[in-house]
Image 1 (tube, helix red, strand yellow):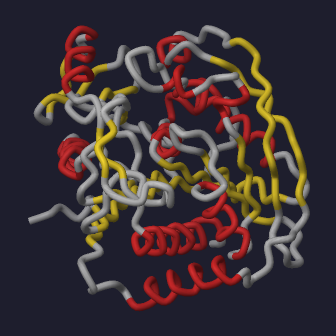
Image 2 (cartoon, one colour):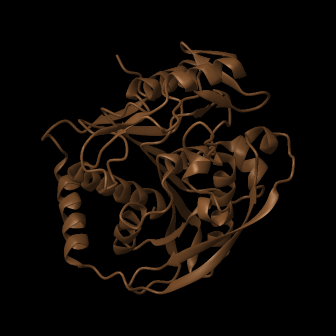
Image 3 (cartoon, helix red, strand yellow):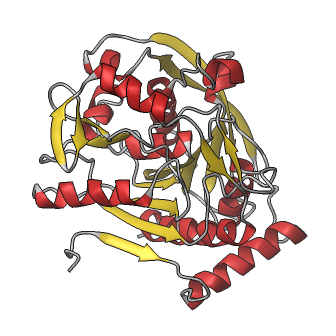
Length: 347
């Protein structure tokens, strides 16, 4: 029997909650036919962030190199005072208007302000710097960018300081989850500000938190997964949630699984399922656990000392994963995201 603390929703075949299905169709129709208006005020802003080598630098309290990240803040085309706002974080492909921009437009139509940017172009990183044998995506720096976005929005006169959420895809989905780790928040964004909601859409599945009191910030997390995602198998997340529950510190995660969906179901250029061997993956590696003290990793449901050689070996053994667009799943996941943010940011 599943314990009460673990929340898993399976959107099975044609059996979909009616309200979600209707919302998905409405969002899809509005975006295709240009309904709902998306011509609200736009501000070009700059995030004052930092560039880190890795999370060891963060946890050691070593200062980062300064980084300036251009960003676009857009408001809904409807009257409002202090809007709820959402930071939208891109995938390993960088910001794409057809993917991250598509969701941001849907959220503005639902009444949210949105902040978008590209962590890679701001640091002059190309695909050669991110994928392949030499690839080293700047995950710690991307988390710093997200917290810089939170600081900017929390201080903006047209945004509700305590009503800022974050949504991310793949690499950005990992960022959306990582920003809920209290250890990282306290190190990178000291003070009272924190995200009020997190949506991790097909995240990379590299990190979790050590099961201990106060490991998460306390904000709710929605994790959207594909049943056929071979980059982050559903069983890996279920094992992590079971570990946290058994330790007495359940993760505040609601998991939704979409049948038949592969990784990157929101990217319309990925027309048919294809295995991309050039992309690095942690799919055959246990989750690395961050928290108080040195990082560990979760092996067969138990914490073990982190072995760098073993990490390199499992990464080499598991390189590559399958990606494919799925319009129906994108519509459903967009509706789930909007509904979750409505509940979390408009109490």
